[in-house]
Image (tube, rainbow, N blue to C red):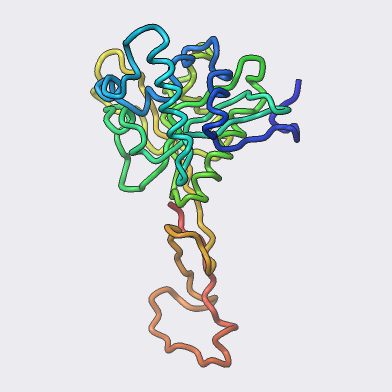
Length: 255
């Protein structure tokens, strides 16, 4: 069976025309009825949108329509799809924190600091394709996608502890897969969570911007003093003839 290293694996942003592929990936799992909306909207917001309750099939159709609308956004789609030989095999939800009301309001996942990080609230690989690196490939692609849109970092809130859970309930992602994608824990389990809450740890990967002219908007750039010159030095500026050889090296600032 092909792995994520197979050249035929393609990962691309979700589009409205391919929104049914999300259902294909999640069919037969806990997330089959979610349509990537439960992390985005509180129970009250879901009722307001009409994506819960109602006649059989009504809410399902509305959920599909809402996800299709999210996928049409120009600034960022609702997530990324993984395809193997044109067959949908994986989905990863991705976006700014403010896209996900449940994540924003949860006492288990409050902001760590003022970094405007994007988040990955869930990730699903289709049965028959798990354990082959597809999830890690999607996480790496998600970081690249977010970085191109100005995100300074990407966060995930994985289940704490090493207890094995059924694959269908591992939609938060696992510590191991995020570590392979370059994420590191920046906060442990918060104390005082209500009974029944899933204990989470916060993992983050900073996105480094290249410190060159023409950087995308939002990419902070720091400048390192030239060799032999200490930071904060008051040495006069070099003449035009020699300025080029002593130009400060530009380095990327972490998000």
